[in-house]
Length: 141
Image (cartoon, rainbow, N blue to C red):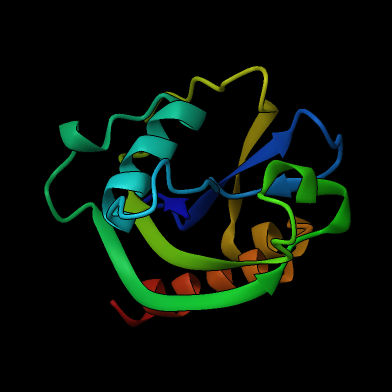
């Protein structure tokens, strides 16, 4: 989840599913790709935000992963017989004025929303849970 000092989370709307809002998501490009490297790559591909240009502690591994069932409509993206996926949670703290450049084939719109509102807008339960966990971490600081 990408967030800023104002307590807002960046949500992006899927191009292939209007009305489906989410944080940046993605998959490993190869079996042993480190999850941190995949997160950096996916953030850049989907938002144009260069994580390597931010302070080294801007990207945090939240040390949490969950397994979830892949929506049947999206299983064509995976190898035959794959029905579940492991999701690793990362947070990225960015300046309030960070520019967002969407990948138009993947996403059509973005919004910065307060944590609770962002969690309610997400179509994915795990994405909502990750945002609420990030909100708790943010509030504890």
